[in-house]
Length: 476
Ligand code: ARG
Image (cartoon, rainbow, N blue to C red; front, side, top):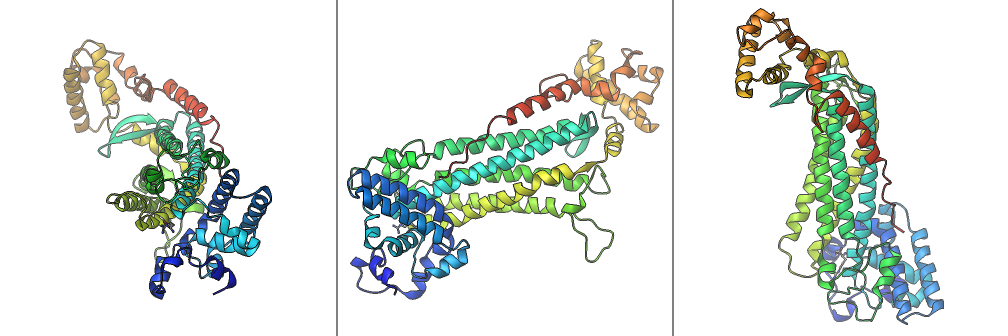
């Protein structure tokens, strides 16, 4: 045991006569993964030091020495996890590590840092700081994706494609309209993450182990220092609450579902059967067996990574469901899925905007698919309602006309007026103008519809909403 380890000991060894089982000791350590919380632990420790100094536990000189020591601990630490972990084999967790290292820096004064605090509030604080930063990163990534989608939508102009319901061709839509559907999902993801951020932005420091600090601390000091909106309201809740981890992973799981749906559509539309989009070579790979292949690896992996995000939120939910108040060691198991989900989301969002920009649409194929197969049948029925026919009746008349056209392999606009009149005397010369591609798009003249003017407006509005300033990156 090093001199420092003798000094700091096991953090809790006073009450014990027997040493820990060595396998158990190693197994229960969280340092092999919570080393990632070094920046947060140091920031929270500095905030705590200021709080206990204000309560008279440290004088000005001691506080300055402690703050300087904590900065040196963070500056001297190995930047990669395995080296940091190997450098302190006796450290149980990141809290223990920082205390050990602080003792190396400032000697016995370091032992005063733990006055009036508990690791239970420390880990609750560190994780909040970690999640807050991860939320900001995810929001930035989603914004970048939404911007890439807006650029593609802008570039698509008045290009059209079929929309599908039940995966059967339904009505023509603007390609821009389709892309804006994903912008809407990204905006909801952003809003959900911001909501979660606002709810979690309270500081547990001063909650103690469970019942509140045993010193009369001014908790506002630490809250302010760490960029929180204030101290948490209840010490039992604050030390055991992990709602913010649940919400964070749930937000990411929902985001993952959106990314996965996009990935699925691109995968499908890039097949020879659809031929709507060409996969960018920079994001695809070949097959070692079949020389002709270009595989949609990026979109397939997006779909796959979504499973991990859903997995993280499931782990957190199951972890929490049976826990009595307040802190329980089970909570330590909540860290790794959160780290993994944050990393996974970061990785997905880093590549997605560039991939989206690199997609090359085959507008001719999309248009051909949108102009065959009676996608204007609904517009045709709407035309008849304009002539005073009840929609149910109009539906039937157009249905009959479609069946007739199918038999001679023609589209509705290829039928003669005479032929059409067999199915309804309301069909007039103006019918053909009402079922052109443009008319079929423009008859959806409602907010959120695929009318060309409406889509132009929707694009401008989305652009404006996304130009609102991003939340400030907030980890001190
Ligand atoms: N490593 C622990 C965790 O992640 C820190 C809190 C430990 N508290 C305790 N009372 N053993 O949950």
